[in-house]
Length: 180
Image (cartoon, rainbow, N blue to C red; front, side):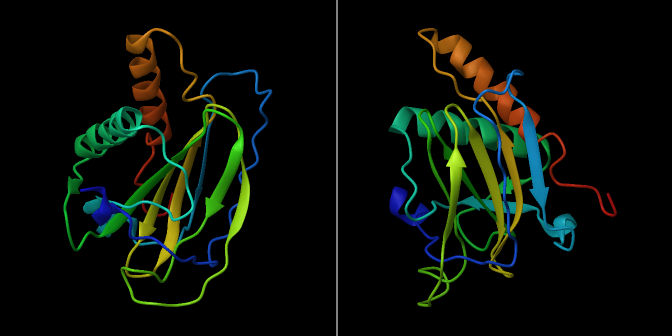
């Protein structure tokens, strides 16, 4: 079932993002957003999940909880999840330990073969990154990152509340308003 989600293999270098956040950040769940101001955000009404090649995803339950949290916020924003022909692709990256963030998108299984390059930056412990890719432009158009969004505790209810709070905060201003 997850095979249909493994569709991103290349990279589009048109949007260069250098999101650098300190692991020693004093405030919990700080959020930063980077976007392509020229992207047609008003046209993004449907989405599908995609996985980024080379990214290690968490266990099945954590993955499901993250996707469900993002789905619930996008639904509240009027977006519809579809299996094919989306107007935007959604992916996430999470780190419960310090790891390398992979910035890649472009040609691949979805669009046929092609060559690409990749860049990496560090995602610190507990960071959650949510990416939106335009499948027609084959570019990353929006990235939101929440610092310390996932600091697992022994309390599953608290973990879920923190996840929902982080996703809500990250996606608060998605999609951006025209001219804003």
